[in-house]
Length: 69
Image (cartoon, rainbow, N blue to C red):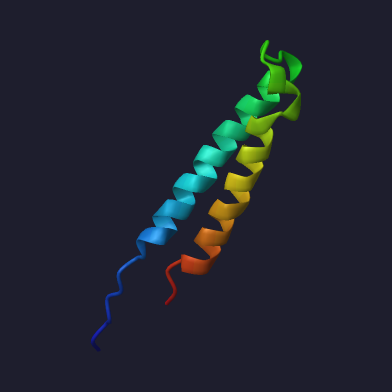
C-alpha cells in the first residue's frame, strides 16, 4: 500500500497566474473601452487583446500540466 507522491509542475502554477492576470487585464481593458485614454493607439484596445491571449494561454497551461492521479 505505498502511495507514490508526485510533484506538481511549476507550469501548472504559471498557468493559474497567467489566467488570473489575463482576467484582470481583460476587465481593465473593458473598463477603458468606455473611457479611452488620450493616446494615439487607444483604438486598438491592447488590454482586451492581451487579456484574452493570457486567459487562453493560462487555460492551456493549466490543462496540459494539471496534476493527474
